[in-house]
Image (cartoon, rainbow, N blue to C red; front, side):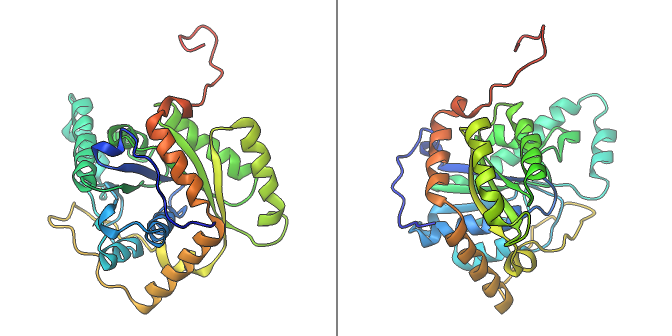
Amino acid sequence: ADISVYSLPLSSLSLMGGLRVLVAGDKSHAGKSTISLGLLGALLEAGYKPAELAYIKPATQCVSSTLTARFCEANGIACVHVGPLVFYRGFTRHFLDEHPDDSVAASAELVQKCAAAVESLSAGKRLTVIDGVGYPSVGSIVGCSSADLAVACGAPVLLVGKSGLGDAIDSFNLCARYFEAQRVPVLGAVFNRVPSSGFYGREKVSAYFTKYFETHRPKQRVYGLLPEASGLDTGAEESCSFAFKHPEVPPPAGPMSEGDEAAVKAVGQLFADCVDMTALLQDLDAACKSPDAYTNKLVCFAGTDAA
């Protein structure tokens, strides 16, 4: 996509601490961190200054260093890669045991801690990328799912989808409706690891994605179909190191290696070639100004208030 420099008007939300976008996936290891990395790199290429950007993973299942975090640290982008909420082994059992009578209030406290971390990091920034955890409902057992965080942080959602066609769109709808149940604006999707050729190759499925979204989801867009590439699979999406407790002091991400540099270059080139960043930022600004315009009006069960 051709991107030079963005001169978007600031929405009312951006006046309170910049635009925010929550990157969510239709499954674990869908490529959320890769897409977050690509977004940040594309914004730098477009003229954003590192001091104008931020990246945070407020809730996570992992405490490993990631390429996205190392990229942020190397480029001077404000970064929190291990946020206030770590779903360490046994966390949900501990939470339910510790809060038999006040779980609603305890859940609200978890959401508030994550939202406060986002608010603090976003101060003075033009755009903050919020990296979701797992699939959209991860964390719902303790009342702190990605949808809960999107509401608390005022962040429209960009979904990372899978390859294919029917399964890819069905999975998008499953995830989008989870957010839409709480009236969170869903911007659209970037579909990841799409084959370059074959029955589900990019050229063969692209027109069908467009047909579906134009007729059934006219407010959402397909911002790109990212092809399968080694830079996406070996660089940014790294193995997860589960913790048994929240680290007292989150460790630094560490320096970038030569392999990291190569992966960043590969992701950056794929974004430049395949992702419509101009449309994405325009839609993000529009969704922050008029979030109700992005909520999908569903056919509801007869006899209910929404019907």
